[in-house]
Length: 252
Length: 251
Image 1: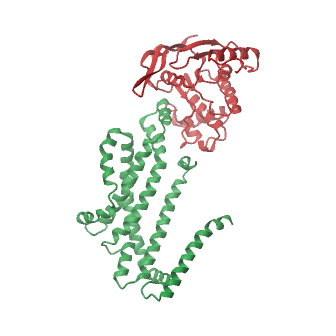
Image 2: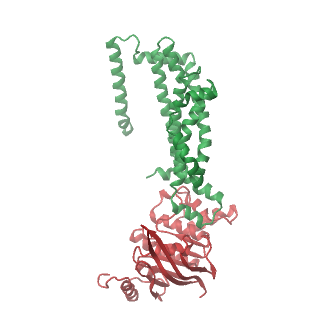
Image 3: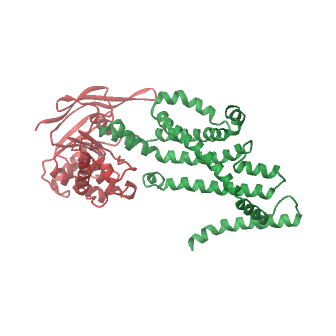
């Protein structure tokens, strides 16, 4: 009952918005802008001929590969930067310059280097999600409380134990925050990247639907699906925050 | 009694706004093997700095610190520091925390040793709990157990129970005395709580305000368990408070 009460306002707002959309389209007799029902039938059409899952699969695959590569690079690099002062002072200025460059600005160079295949969007996802994760991981190392490092020093543990039982678990909550941000950015970027070229993906679906006969019902269907999958991906990352070994950080 | 810790003429200053702030001025003291020494002083007098130097975390500007007659080395498991904020790792369970320092034990033994010490401090049944699921008093127990588990020769305790409520504080003192009955260690305790010092220590040193030096020394020749309401304890308390510059009527 309490749960229903909590989600009720959100559902009401969405319902009101749908109703307003429907009403306005009907009232203005728009021939090009679809009603919500047309979006539903359009989506059903895409499901029936199997193209929807092909597009979703293509987008998720690119995000999966680009994001995984970014995690593999960002976490060790972030730990190193956080732990070794010289590495930080050498590389951090470079990263601070690269970080604010929008991934969209990289598109021409990505096409030049990698062509219009899968490698381009994967590269763009990598470049967009790697920096937030490096920054979060480094900040995580810098904010380890000194009392814990002192305790580790006091018990005279090996460097391996120090990293495995103190440094990495202490930073893990920050790494997960970085991964949440990184995956969010990656999902934004894959759709933008797919609008440029390629023959698959949700971004391609949107652009192609408009170009091939102004199918705005499919454009909106694509947008809504992107939103829903984004929500789902964030939900998966939030599950990581529930892990017992990182809960200490979020518990307060 | 054999001398365990010998501190001679240590000084420490810090740069503060360009000026040199002398914190510890010429402190010399000895602690016997198995002795429980309490050091009391007004807040901000440099107690913690003194402790950090003896425990090896901070280097003195001058003077020497000998442990068992040899110059003190880097911090190691022979002397464990327990501080006010505590340093139980929040990402490890109680059992994993207690196993943390057991490097020399064979892997198969570690759990047994950890559980033994968990039981000793009354944490049986909480081995699998994470620190954020425990109360402040239980965290202190875990901290004591983790220290005792590595069998340190010296315990450095810096206001260990100050963050606890009065009742838990009293319980932890009794607990500490009970464990020290079983496993004798040399203890150096720093506190601002005169009653706590009298309750626990064999000898009490009173520090002066900053820059700190040892101002007075009291032997506590009272058998355990000590009754804190006894006239001897009250008399000693008044004398120590007097050294600290607190009026006996107000105290």
